[in-house]
Structures are given as structure tokens and as C-alpha cells.
Image 1 (tube, rainbow, N blue to C red):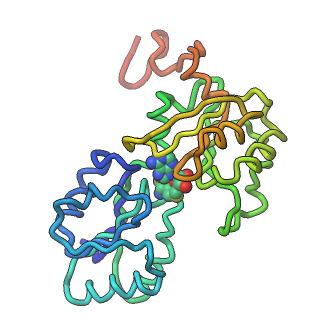
Image 2 (cartoon, helix red, strand yellow):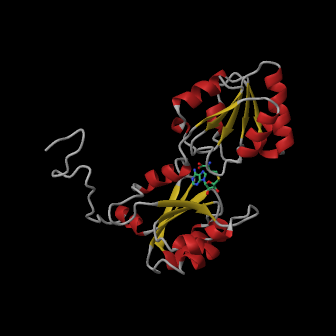
Image 3 (cartoon, rainbow, N blue to C red):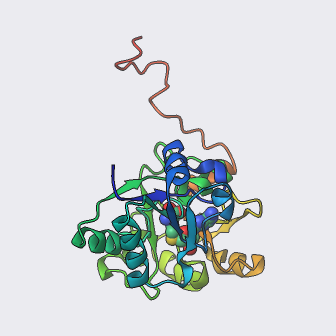
Length: 252
Ligand code: SAH
């Protein structure tokens, strides 16, 4: 038992929370949720008090949690997708630990996977890419120089870019330093929400695609040759299910 549970709410569809997350949410006396991206449908029948953290700063959030824990309440802190990706949970957990409050994390379905599902796409295709780089471009949060898009692009792996549709020109320019201009790109807006949208194109047209579609936030940019798989069959089959490939669970 922890005092506070950091719960991954999933990408939007209220059915994409884990059973454990759902159970803890139902049991919580206080729920603090990240209002901008968490689907309020998740909070419809909960018994606990519900607060939107959108207008709160870190001190206020930690104070609210600490006050509730002190009176024996169970607290759920609900974050969009999976809390491990751009969840800003570290500073909350550090402060809570300093106050002697224990925290546990319940994973969730990240938007990166809801987006791949919307595309109908595996992100790791044999012989095309076996690596997914999840990153962002620098906004107000700095990104270490060693992780610039330009240097990550050198791998030409599948790449998923969070928090960056507002800087599509920059994304395009940086990626074009290493990926060929006709590399497949896809943008998924509000993956798993009823208003989900998908646009597809080529890297040399990425910024236009995003501008023409009017996509300004809550979207992911997918880049790489693996993205061609949902356009045309690539004919790349894994060894795993190949009939001549025997392994621990299947002998020839
Ligand atoms: N922890 C979250 C990410 C939080 S950062 C997760 O695992 O998904 C917020 C960014 O995530 C947004 O700017 C957007 O790039 C992406 N995002 C979150 N939900 C999304 C969704 N439903 N569809 C597309 N992108 C989403």
C-alpha cells in the first residue's frame, strides 16, 4: 500500500486505463487529475473529491496531497498516457518522499501506442527499424544538446515526437539533415478520442501537412520508413513466426 498512487489514465479512451488504475481511482478519497489531457469521463462515478491540477502549481499540489494523506485519505494522482513519459512526476514524488509520504506508479497506455494503433502500425519492422526513439524538441523545457533531433535523426530509426506539432518547421528542418526527403511521416491528433485525426505524408512536406490540417496540440509526429507498413505491405516478416524458426515453445 502506498499513500499516493500516480496512475496512468491512458491516452483518452476511458476504456484504455488498466484494471488496477480503475480500481484505485474508484477507491481514492482524493483525485488530482491533469485537466488538459485526461478524459473527464474517467471521473464520472468516483466517490472521491476531484480536483483539476491545471491551475495549480507544484507547491499547491504537494500541499493538497500531504494534507489528505495526513488525515488518512487515499490519494490518486491521475496523469495522461503513461506517467513515465513527460509526466513531471519526479518533482512531485521527490517532494512527497521528503515529507515521508510513499508513492507508487501504476502504468498506463501511452499516447505513443494509441497513435500506433490508430495508424494500424507496428513501429518495429524487421530489417527496417528495430528501434523507436521517443523525443521532443526544445520548448520551455530544455533538451540536452546530445539529444538534438539532428543527432537522433542520424539513426534513421522509427521516431515519435511528442509536444512538438507547434514547431513543425523546426522538426522538419532538423530531420531532413539525416532522413531522406521522401521518408514517410504521420501525425496523429487526439489518438483514441472520438475526434482522433490522422494525416500522412512525406517528411519534406511535414510542416505543411500540420498547418493545412490545423493541428496545433495533442498530437504526435511519427517518422521513419517503418511507417510505410500501413500504406503498402513491406514484405518483411519476423523470424518469430517463421515456419523454420524453432524456439523454446515451438520445435520444428
Ligand atoms: N504521458 C503522456 C504524454 C504527456 S506529454 C503519454 O504517455 O502519452 C503531452 C503530449 O503527449 C502532447 O503534447 C502530445 O504530443 C502527446 N499526447 C498525449 N495524448 C495524446 C493523444 N491522445 N493523441 C496524440 N498525442 C497525445
